[in-house]
Image (cartoon, rainbow, N blue to C red; front, side, top):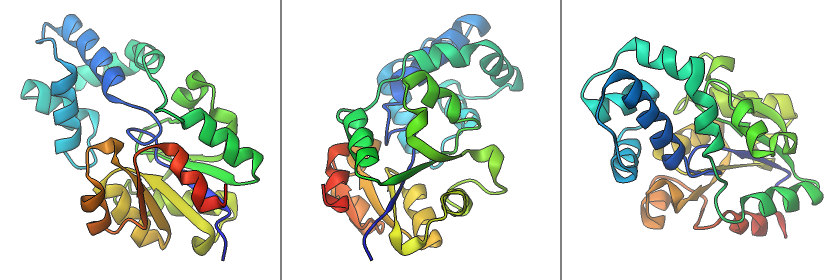
Length: 214
């Protein structure tokens, strides 16, 4: 059965999250007297921790975690992070082409409120279903987010492609019964992603188009 639906992960699939995370981390460091961090430090911390939450990321960066940090982040550091976000090469063109081709799109992200950065990036309207961790009981690698997105879209598993980048994403896609195209932008090689169960792999988002006959 031809693919009709595309559900995207967000961080390190659609956007390079490292620069924005570095921006918010260094603003946080300035506010709380912590050490400034580099792009490389954030990148290594992000890819080394499965399903990396802010608590896990900041613990990797500074050796411990304080709840007050997240409160500060939620209060006034999200917007600077969103403003630093950039879509990966070909991202906007891919979304536009899929939309024009009649592909129905959703998003499943472990972020609390993924609609906010989507709005900042100007791509919110491409997605007919947006599911974050506040919308489900279990976050990825559980399949809940993908299943919820499919429910909202009216999608069947055999018609759905999940575009992602990590091991947790691939575990979730398999549990949801959907094919996954895994991008190397998350730090894994094509060989690693295929071994983890990816249906296809890609270096650029425009490669998704071929699976929809474009």
